[in-house]
Length: 166
Image 1 (cartoon, rainbow, N blue to C red):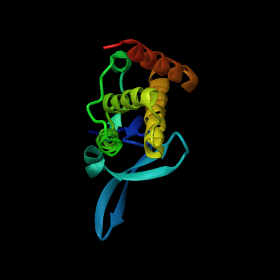
Image 2: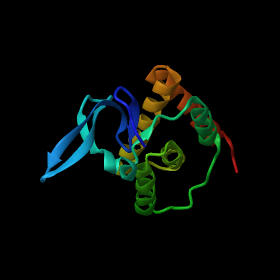
Image 3: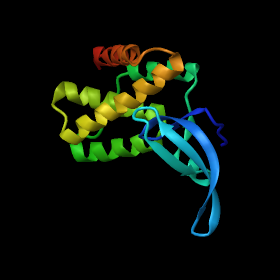
Image 4: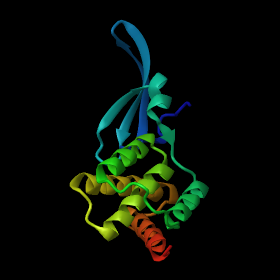
């Protein structure tokens, strides 16, 4: 997958970045091409070897139509099969690493449902906040709305999933 300077791309589990430069650097005597990225959340800079961009899951922003499907996904109630928090945490951590918004949404929805029955562990609360941030930031950029409005859309969808009693 090739990216262009100025393009917004998603770095899994970190969020939306901007490709600021694409350049070559010598590392241990061999030349590599790097994407120079800037995280929008905190302006930190990253260098990702172009050869590794697929392996780490660097991807373009979702399209508006994909966001619409994602919101529908958030509205569907899904019972958690994993009751032990450590197993659930491990499973959710794997989903967060994929960088796919559907997986991040699944983690958010799962932890939201768990939080309505009992309090989340500290690590799960941090994961919940991270998942929510990743969804909010990408949805806001794709839809051209504020992060507050994006969070409102997500909360509304999560509330719909909780309203369905199975």
